[in-house]
Amino acid sequence: MTDIKSLALSELKDEMAAMGEKAFRAEQLYGWMHRKLAVSYEEMTNLPKALADRCRQRYEYTVLKPILVQESAIDGTRKYLFGLADGNAVESVLMRYKHGNCVCVSSQVGCRMGCRFCASTLDGLERNLRPSEMLDQVYAIMRHTGERVSNVVVMGSGEPLDNYDNLLRFIELLTDENGLHISQRNVTVSTCGLVPEMRRLADRKLQITPALSLHAATDEKRRALMPIAERYPLEELMEACAYYFEQTGRRITFEYSLVKGVNDSEEDAGKLASLIGRLNCHVNLIPVNPIRERGYRQSDRRAVEAFRNRLQNRGINVTVRREMGRDIDGACGQLRRRYRKET
Ligand code: SAH
Image 1 (tube, rainbow, N blue to C red):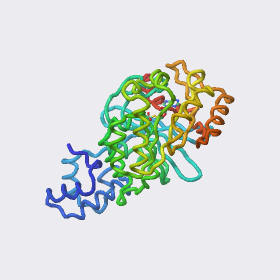
Image 2 (cartoon, rainbow, N blue to C red):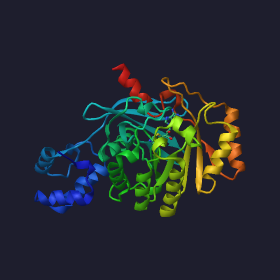
Image 3 (cartoon, helix red, strand yellow):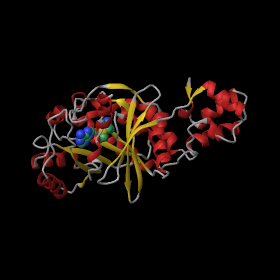
Image 4 (tube, rainbow, N blue to C red):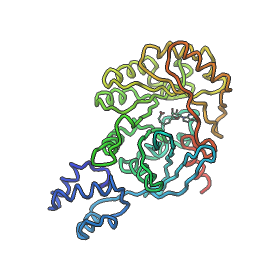
């Protein structure tokens, strides 16, 4: 069955035409789904019942059910675990900032990239999420809080560029003026570095904000943390980053999780500065969020400071990311994993 919430408005218009319905019905339906965030046809009060019945027979209408909501006592961050129609579960995070609410969405159920420090990948990839299922994470959180969401980061479980077509449709619908109309600049997509897809995405010239999970400044160290580094060496990756900037004019954020004794020395910082120094970029340092299954530990506060200073002295924009939701299994894949183990 066609997934109605993943259709673009133009496609929905074609569907309505094929059903012999008037074109404005497509706009009505689309508005109910993507602006008013309806969870069923019953809510669509100006839609004739006969049409609702036909749609119900013809299309699948995705909705996410909150299974668990955890709120951090430290910073108010909320972590949601949502149930999908097929019994799988995904997690999303709501972060409240002064400048607005930000939702971190998952792009896949599980992940197959195998990064050593990440909980999402421990059980491998279950399946890709559909555009509607990514949107629903944002929609369900807006409904639950009654508050608008102004920023979306695709930094939850999964590798977004490993689910390329669905990701692009998700961005199209999320930023569409007939939907929530979130600005492309307020949508961040984070990748572990799938070079061909990064180049493909660059060619689309979207104004979204790119983020690259770097985590190491040499191939040897990166391979020890991220299996994807076996496939794409840093030289190719840096060329792809430069290409991305050339095509889009959008500055890249490099994410670098600091792991004690692994990638956090001042020498590492120096190598990082040399690697990225020529790019128009920003570095986000994240103290690694330890997961039970792996032995990695967080860098000391002093090591973090020294690392940051070294980058700053080399003229690189750098911030240390405020850790949010530490007390609620905030890091990628932790909550879903705990839930799966308990049930
Ligand atoms: N697959 C994408 C997006 C999901 S992960 C990517 O790799 O970018 C979002 C970010 O969180 C990535 O930078 C990832 O490397 C990082 N991350 C995952 N687990 C972490 C942990 N336990 N501690 C700190 N950062 C982590």
